[in-house]
Image (tube, rainbow, N blue to C red):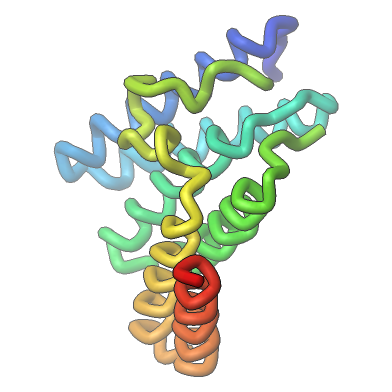
Length: 163
């Protein structure tokens, strides 16, 4: 499948796929974007299955890009699934666990294709934003109990962060 001995080359490949996906997204060519973003996810899964260390910012960036595209094409259940995965990974970032069992400069400012997301991923407020995004998408798919739970979680986090 993929043979990269160097973690930096693997991270660069994922970055390249995300960049390409973002370019297609910007052109509103969403299904083409999903081809590249799904490939980025496959490379991440491959890296994890090989025991590579994976930067959570790189994972979240890939998940974020996919969630955004699915939301734009109104595949809201899939978008919600990706947002749940984002919340899990951003929670781990906030708690200080930034690496899984690919470590590269994935969070470096100006890294192409990252929607500038990785420069502020560890911010606790982003976790609140993702909970609110999950709330909105859950509400749109008529899963109001999940929407309410996520909204309450966002408020709890805000209260905690403001104290």
